[in-house]
Length: 170
Image 1 (spheres, rainbow, N blue to C red):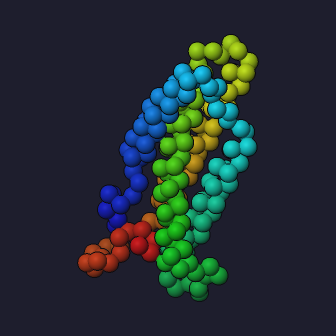
Image 2 (image 1 turned 120 degrees about the vertical axis):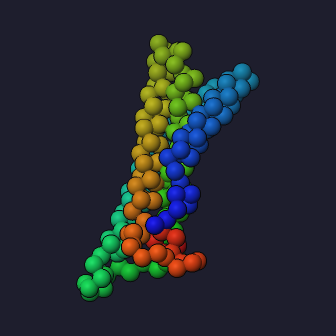
């Protein structure tokens, strides 16, 4: 079993989202006070986020299938190296925190537009920020799910000192 301090916790994600939203909100207000327009949020920005979700979940699923396969079965077609498994785990953890930080940024964008929703162009920016915030939640959730998929099964026997730490291949 992996100690809890080695995983990216939901609390860490919530703190990252809160910190990112406050910092982004302050930067956006300063940006506007300097006489600049708020940044545009393109719809195309959703594509890499959703691609990241698919890639992390597929890679983590493959690791999970290998780790949880019965021991007596013939070898899989896919046998991950320890480096591949660690890479998937790190990508999942990065998605969990990165999605939380993006969530804070997009929420701050939505909040700064709340006061002028009667203007059609501002309403469009608000909608894009809200949809992007939902996409960021999906990225973060995929990171947490991918992190969970990379866990090794619990054993009844204690692990040797300096041995397995509970994640797939270290």
